[in-house]
Image (cartoon, rainbow, N blue to C red):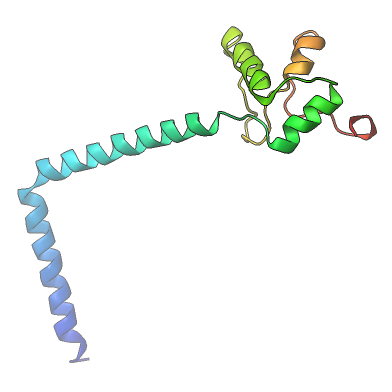
Length: 125
């Protein structure tokens, strides 16, 4: 038990020193905290925008083209998705789980139905 006493005393002294330091530098610490929060928010927003460049996987784009018998490029499909979401802001380019992109072919050909991903089943192969 006596061996633990010095380390406990050092811990208490370190805590007291930290409290004293924080009392002196509240404004500096608050500024650093705000800066970190703003920087984190900015980085998060930028990374989401960069990731949103492709709404489907490579396999997803290929399946969309095959199912809907289209020769549109990935860029053209993305541009149509962005056009749809600008036209109607309630429609998002990805589903809630962020795993499937909007299917612009279904939207255009079936009376503006909002479908994410591609059809499933025998007819989709």
